[in-house]
Length: 81
Ligand code: SF4
Image (cartoon, helix red, strand yellow):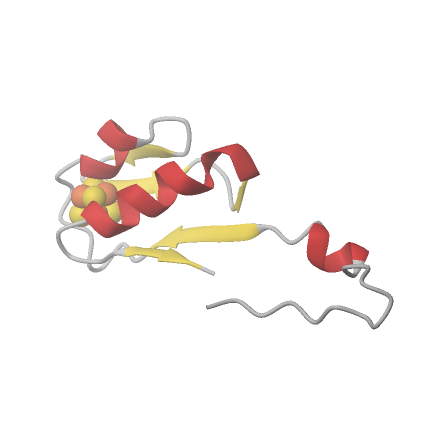
């Protein structure tokens, strides 16, 4: 669960509003089955035998697909922060 402190006047801090989720892949753990690339080719691609993210910061409109890829990875090699 992510908790965002809300000031007393009800405004959410602008920095929190612009919060970006980052993604990386543990190359030592990845078994290269390409599941993440099939689910979200906008963010993941193969580099030899392992997957790599094309970007570090995930655009908000792709967060759900990246989350689905992370949950589908058979070895939990996709790390979202
Ligand atoms: S789903 Fe996981 S194991 Fe498969 S290619 Fe992507 S990061 Fe590697």
